[in-house]
Picture 1 (tube, rainbow, N blue to C red):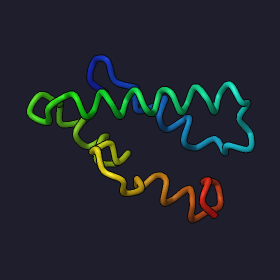
Picture 2 (cartoon, one colour):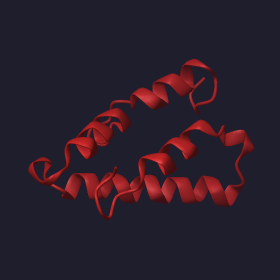
Picture 3 (cartoon, helix red, strand yellow):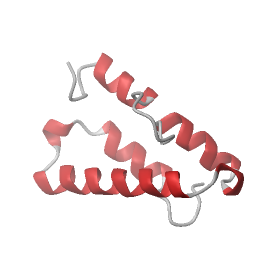
Picture 4 (spheres, rainbow, N blue to C red):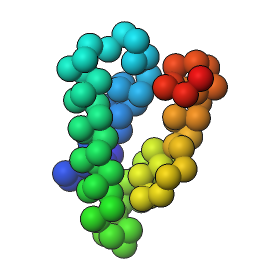
Length: 85
């Protein structure tokens, strides 16, 4: 379960698993805004105040305020669903 004020893990997974080619422009824009907002919330929330599940979710989605690709993005790229082929 994600912390209050953070994007739910199921929303993140749903957005990540649907190929961009099958999303409307509105969905793509919404995903980008939600992702940036959640990343900002991750940066502003100290790790000491995050739940264990939120820390794990941030690690998985690479919301740790650095430029490494997330494991999910690497997997999407590997199967041709990411924006980097």
